[in-house]
Image 1 (cartoon, rainbow, N blue to C red):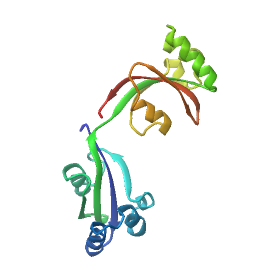
Image 2: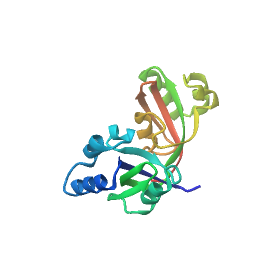
Image 3: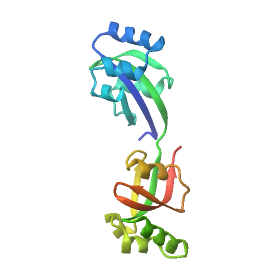
Length: 189
């Protein structure tokens, strides 16, 4: 299994000529996302052609080859696949970013702060999670296992992929309540 992932956006059209015309317009300054919304036949058009993040082998070979081998930040194409003709721009490519963390979910910021103080004064994170967390993970000491960037709600994700390891962080407010988070491992960028 490859340890690479990439983010890309594309414009899918029916003819090579239309693809070449759009590529020229983008080279002359037309916004890629606007061109995708106006012309792409892919449902991703609604997101300006963005396909999000994926790993090698998740897209058709011709598309995959461009995204994982050609220059990042350059509009490539026309790329012909079974779906039609694509303009493809790899927006990022790098090592898979993953983390392991545990958390405690409570309803109030006040309670989160009280529990954080208890942990900082020597209480066991896992025991506090078991006794107080509203999340089912509380039963396993708050452990969330290993997960990738973008798999959690944005406020949580931001802390997980930028915060200091092995330190109790938070309270972090999300739609679920208030979290105390401890990042136990992180790989990648």
